Image (tube, rainbow, N blue to C red):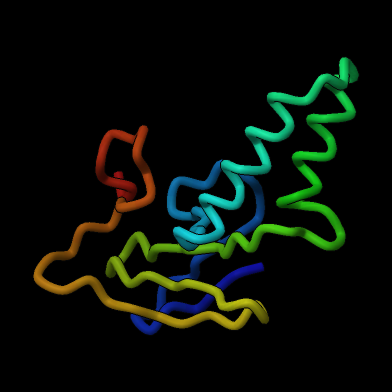
Amino acid sequence: MWIKCKCGEAIKDTFDSIPYKGRIISDKEFFDLLDIAEEKIKSEDNDRDRLAREFGDVLWGSTPRIRVNFIYQCIECGRIYMEDETGELYGFMPEGHEKCNLLDFKGSGNLKE
């Protein structure tokens, strides 16, 4: 999949661990997720692999209980694209700067290098 940014740059989503791709979660969903994690941690069930799979299904299963949306940032102009619950993308331009690495917390800073 790829997104054509307004600046003309192609934002490619072809694999995981992309420095300009992330996930965004609402505060309400985040605290629901913490409650589910706590429930699994406190469980007396000794099958930790099954508990881990069940927890993963909360986010990535066929009927996820927690909504996490994808977010992308153009490495050329800094525009941010965020998906809604249907997968439609909405673009936003950061004001006052052209920082193009807002999602790359571990990177060196400039994705263009």
